[in-house]
Length: 164
Image (cartoon, rainbow, N blue to C red; front, top):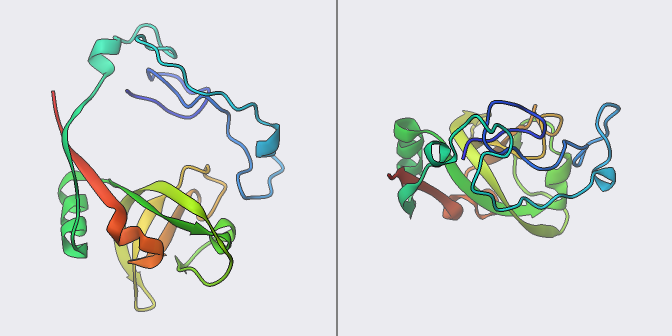
């Protein structure tokens, strides 16, 4: 389904909770503790734009696949676009602002899924360029660079082929 941030228009099903200050100090966003958590409901209609056709807005994948090496990941991003990735989040990741992240201190907090949009090299370190879901006030305007292989990210990249 098409979707977007809470309160946006022109999509079928938007995110159900408003943005909040997720791991950042903010004068414009509420604390995440103050935002009502709303679980998405299963619906067979476009909740946020009833002029859209639910059937036509729905997209499927015909298959999904993982990757066995960095070159295959890069090739897939180049050829098809973003890939989904997961990695272990550590306490020091919460305060990321810029540069290439690799775990230095703090305990593991759990797993986290993100979107990988590219790659590069900075100061001799190869990294993945990723988009986080914590809003555009976190990190580098909602994006971050993570060292290739750090926190298990290379082993947890997946993509899919479009279906009918």
